[in-house]
Amino acid sequence: MSLFDRSESSDASEFKNFVSGQASGVETPDTTYVSFTNHRGNNRGRDADAPSAAAERLNATTLALVAIACTGGLLFGYDTGVVSGALILLASKPENCARYGGFGLSNFEQEVVVDATIGGAVVGAALAGWASDRYGRHPIISAAAFGFGVGSVIMAVAPDLDILVCGRVVVGLAIGLASHTVPVYLGECASPGTRGRVLGCFNGFVVLGQILAAVMDGAFFYLRDGWRYMLGFGAVFAVMQFVGMAMLLPESPRFLFKKGEEDLAAKVLTRLRGESNEDLIRRDLEDIRVSLEEQASQLSLVQILQSPGIRHALTLGVGIMALQQFSGINTVMYYSATILKDAGFGSQGDSLCCCAKDAIPIWLSLTTSVSQFSGILLGQYMADSLGRRPLLVSSAACASVALGVLGTGFILGGGALAKAMTMVGLVGYLIAFGWGLATLPWTLNGELYPMAARSVCVSIATMTNWISNFIVSGTFLTLVQSPIKTQGTFWILGGISLLGFVWLYYRMPETKGKTLGGITAMFENLAMGVPLHEASQNLGHGERSQSPEQIFTINSDLFTNVTGEKKVTSTEAGHYYHSKSFTVHESRGEVGKEESNVRPYQSDD
Image (cartoon, rainbow, N blue to C red; front, side, top):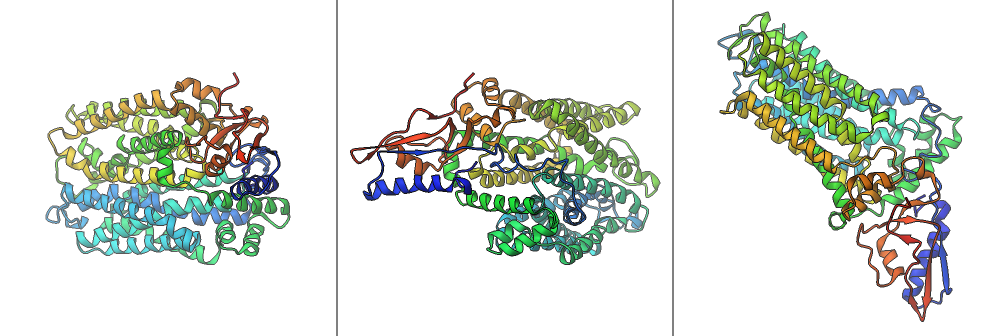
């Protein structure tokens, strides 16, 4: 249990009073025993005594909340995926096919259209944390829905490239707000036993949005100025979400509790859990209180960078986020129809034929979303048996091979063999990416860091992901038109994936089954030079995490006062292996050092 948990508050209070007493010269006992016992186990001790996921069902209110809030994820997926088919028509020249209503966009202008959304998303994601903490989760999700709707309308009526780009920026801002705030809102409204399923729905809605985008690209292709319908269709779901948020959904109970509206938070929880689940409601309210108290002791960026263990974890978290993007996933998602057209599907050459053949690469781009979705399902199926490390390492390795095959297909000149290799490479890459690199970077960044550093570290990793996305997507078509051509571009991406595989093989520990405290201590050991296989194996998995010997967190300033000369600098909120208790002695008015039963974690094996 946390140092701040209510059942331990008396011990913690004695501990703090002892320290303040020494500082002020107040007499204290010769020996003070302070015992910390983590009786709940993992994830700040909140989930272990919760009902199992199977025992907790999603009631009608929670299902409505998930469906409405996750529409933000669907719009995220739709507006990032729909541009693939729209670019085919936007790049067409009016003199060749007036029916398409294209602007004759150059490769650079197409990159601007794509990167305008990503740039807006970077800004939106950067503002989302501050805005949702200040104004609430509910208003920010509603603002995102409004932005999706306004941006979609602007794009649909855009008379030129400049206005189109403005609409893409507005949609990008909405994506940034939604991608941060919707998962936070869902996590705060879901019960511990259903939180995993509820958060998984957001990722599912993102992929569903990408699949829907591919279908609508194909359907609207046959209409005059079809790209306007493609880009504007998202407004339908935006209006549905905005109305649903306004009429049906409450503010998150955690935010209400944080603002001092505890009675209203209890009413919201009653509405979400049901009046018959009083014990669950009381437990959730207590968990909110505990987590808010823990959050009050957040570490600064400077403290994080001064901590070898957290710095080691942050390097890994940021690295896998960058690898996810520099392996080329969003070049495929944003430009899939263009890639397939260049591979020889549909019309040949730079011009469109203004006939049904032009729709072939647009319909084939549906395979990108479906293939990635299949890979994600495969990864979910294998996750429990294999763990995080094998899935992520194999994903990078197989993605590298598939990108090599994809690039080779562009050398063969557009014949049947070239098309077959292109499709095999494309589908193979997306399946391999889906089972590991698609979701695990986000999963890992949620568990690599101690609670006191998590908010800052996850923000850094998320911004790294968006900035990497911006760089890769904004240079893809330029590289394709350079001397290295399409094949060379995919080989470079494959080479980056190969380097990522080697890096992960030697640097990626296994986190499956470990408590959050155990993961933190593992990175402390890695930072001290403990070999990867020993650091991964020595820290107990799930069954060991329930033993009396637990990882706990204690504020370093408090601990340094007690331990006298010894400085706790490894994490600034040091993570120590706890046996039973520790003893503080008073000797001639000075504070003595801690007993040996509080020490940096070492395996008992």
